[in-house]
Amino acid sequence: MFEIDLNCSLFQVFRGTIADASDFDPTADAEALYNAMKGIGSDKEAILDLVTSRSNAQRQEVIAAYKSNFGQDLIDDLKYELTGKFERLIVSLMRTPAYHDAKEIHDGTGTNERCLIEVLASRNNKQIHDMVAAYKDAYGRDLEEDVIADTSGHFKKMLVVLLQGTRDESGVVDADLVQQDAQDLYAAGEEQWGTDEAKFIMILGNRSVTHLRMVFDEYEKIAEMSIEDSIKNELSGDFERLMLAVVQCIRSIPMFFAKRLYKSMKGLGTADNTLIRIMISRSEIDMLDIRECFRLRYEKSLYNMIKDDTSGDYKRTLLNLCGGDDEPTVRPASNFDPAADAQALRKAMKGFGTDEDAIIDIVARRSNAQRQEIRQAFKSLLGRDLMKDLKSELSKNLERLIIGLMLTPAEFDAKMMRKAMEGAGTDEHALIEILVTRSNQEIHAMNAAYQDAYKKSLEDAVQSDTSGHFCRILVSLVKGKVFQEFVKCSNKDIEQIIKKEMSGDVKNAFYAIVCSVKNQPSYFADRLYKAMKGLGTDDRALIRIMVSRSEIDLFNIRKEFKETHDDSLHEFIQGDTSGDYRKTLLILCGGED
View 1 (cartoon, rainbow, N blue to C red):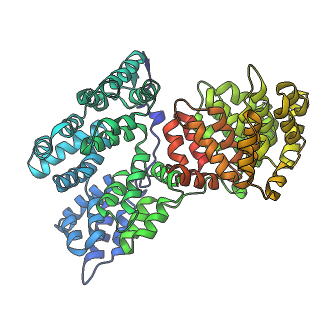
View 2 (view 1 turned 30 degrees about the horizontal axis):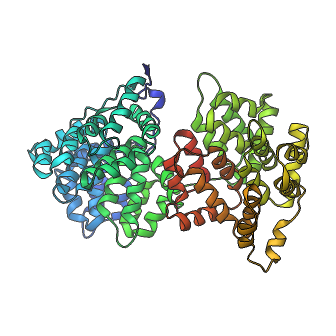
View 3 (view 1 turned 90 degrees about the vertical axis):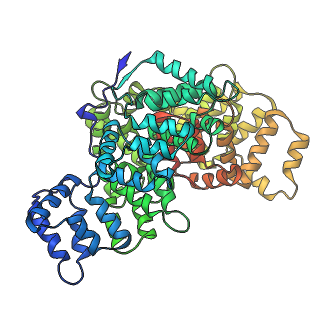
């Protein structure tokens, strides 16, 4: 067994947008609110500015000061003075988190199972215990009894389990139990006719977040599909939605809420109750992370979507809670500091353990030209080779992906050609893909990089590793012979000629040339699809394409992928990869279509 202490203060970084105000004076705030509401009309701007610039704990002090100074209930006065969605939002901000959750569930019980699912799937043990107590205090009723009376079947059972607030939060992971739970989930669903729902409920309702993330990875190896796909296959209705929400929250609570926020605003109309509930409940917890997930997934900032979808004082209050708009994925050159990035990378690799997140966030969010400046700065400032340090600190697919990003395009292509030819067998598809899609200038640069790195010409390497007509085609491409111009000028249906007259690697090479010339993004979209479909993943192809096209035409590749395969490239990567490797690929992908 090993222990991961996620509750250690080192890991508790504030990621909210609303914090305690400095120089806070509850009596002065109470007086300011009283003055904003006295007389004819009310100063809504003063109210929203004050309420959204105080933490929830400070708002409770303002409520107490208001009553002791003016003998009136602040929430009652706000309800009287304000109207509509703006009133709901401001009044909800004045409640404690536990009472806000309790009211949301009370008002939604019987009519809004999605609210019940969202709240119970995303709260930790303490939040659930506090909510249950607040519900009892506010309504004189037992929340569990009301849930039991209002729901049924396995949906009810899972809700009751979550209401106990007994999920393991110790941070201890037993590797043997990870394997056992993954096998038990497989046996309870995909392996048998019918589903053992009780096993899903017990494991997903009680195991720790860290444990379950490892279980999901092991499950995917056993079942050859994600736990989400299995749930969709085996369960249905509200129970399916609840279990999917639990899995999503185990994987990433910020991403779960990013999706909920997007759905609340997309299309005609706005689900204001959902929008208000999430913006309030996460404003002091992880709103910054939600904003980041939102931008990565939808290529639009949460701030701008709120701005476009709401209006008036309601909009302004929501934007204050959002906390600001987000920077683009690649930091503008004017803000780029290679020395600072070099120091940050060294810090991420110094001492015990490695801060993979910091490495990913720097490397994946800089252009290739900027990464080369970082390599130089790392050497000149620290006297160390950044590539060697990264190789020693990272492993497996993440290491291959990060190193690939740090190489120049020519160095990367040369390395990929070398990899395709070394060892037993040759990766003909990789050779074809690289050579038929690069311009003459790119091929000449690759030739020079290959010679420099391996002290052998690329042409000689190709000749020694291939044979026959296929070899001659590749050598011609290595020399920069422009087959593409022949394809463009030909009046014949060249694809039919290739299919009819050719075979094997020669056929594949010519066919790739034709497809690349006709629609290169479509060609790469097809290659990416083949890299991820079916059993296993061709990670070398996935890395090769994502790295080489990320600054060229990946946006168009994404569009072609979506049009051809219905699902987005983002969804395919998310479903077919995991961990820091997936995170890096999704940053390169840039968003969901």
